[in-house]
Every structure is written in structure tokens, then in C-alpha cells.
Image (cartoon, rainbow, N blue to C red; front, side, top):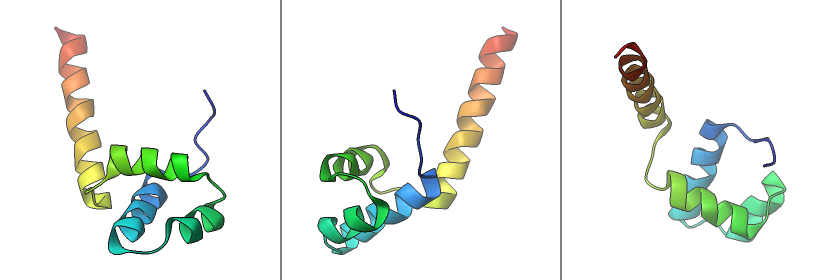
Length: 70
């Protein structure tokens, strides 16, 4: 699998721009990604804000720590 070259906050910002009505071609051209990649990001990160992503990561980390100690 190819390594992620864009940060998650950058991806979320781009998905939010797409949802706000900015053209997919414009976003793809700026980020140098395909439309398929942009729509995969939308499926994965659609509706999220950066602050929600941070909170989700904290919850996941806490969950995995509890599992590892059981």
C-alpha cells in the first residue's frame, strides 16, 4: 500500500471543501490526487471536523490500551 502523503487534517479540509461545493477537479489539481482518491477520502472522512478526528483518535487509543492490558 502506498504511504499517505497528505495529513488527515488536510484531507478533512479538502473533503469539507468538496461538500461545500468547490469543484472536485480544482481540489484534485491542487492536491495532485485522482478523483477516485478524493471520493474515497469523502467516504472515509465525510462529515468530520479536525477536532472530531483528534477526539476519535484519543478514544481509539484508550480502547486499544484497555484491550492490551486485559
